[in-house]
Image (cartoon, rainbow, N blue to C red; front, side):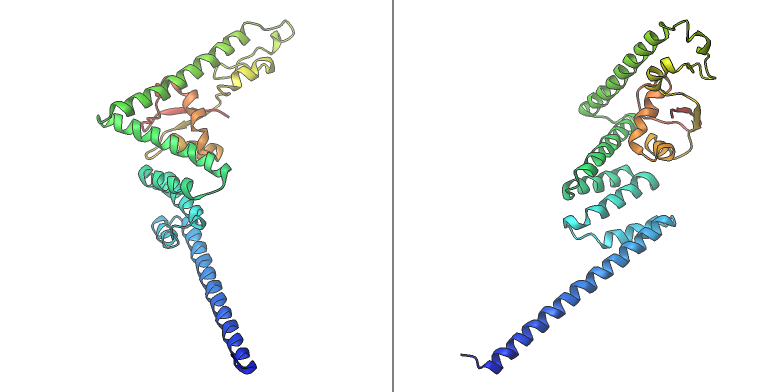
Amino acid sequence: MLSPRAFASLLSCAALALLLSSCDQFSLSAAKTKVEEQARDAQAAGDFPRAIRLYESLLDGTAKTAKIHYSLALIYDDKLKDPVSALHHFRRFLAMSDDDRSKKEVATFIQRIQLELAAGTADSGIMTKREAARLKNENLKLQEKLVLVQADLVEARKRPSAKDAAKAARDSKGFSTNPATATAERAIGPETRTYTVQKGDTLASIARKYYKNPNRYKDIADANQNLLNGTVNLKIGQVLIIPK
């Protein structure tokens, strides 16, 4: 049986060990926070290779680093135009995160990247039957949506009232300025802005530029159905309509 003095000594040693362990954990956490801040600074400065190295040094396979995968995915997707790497990190985020709202957004990013990759594969002349079928289905859905919107627009234009006749002016793009038909036309968008495609552009990067939301690439695709033929393929010099 331990003497009171020995027991007190043992308790002191245990307390000291616990304190040292807590200090080590605090120091490690502070170091990781500093590295993450440096990565964000490098990203903001446009030094993406350094930002990637710093972010990757923080990955440890735990759910706590899900947001690091998200940051890496955005760099690869929006800045480096590397959809394969972006897809990997978006998928890792989905597997690790418990933020349902963010996971829904990321799932949309993944769907868009997969569509872009399938379109790129088609351009290169290499496409599996499964990829071709999926791309065809996506195009059909876009075409069906456009047909419905156009039908609503035609019906709305057939019913102008006498009171609104004076307001039936058209803008430079041929769309009504009459509030009575604005709802139907807004589905396609008041086409008042254009953008000339530059090297490295994607529908997602253009949507991020104008709307701060890459998910709205579908709005641009719908407004340019005739030009893009239901695909997400862009060519340098194309003039796209950018709905508001």
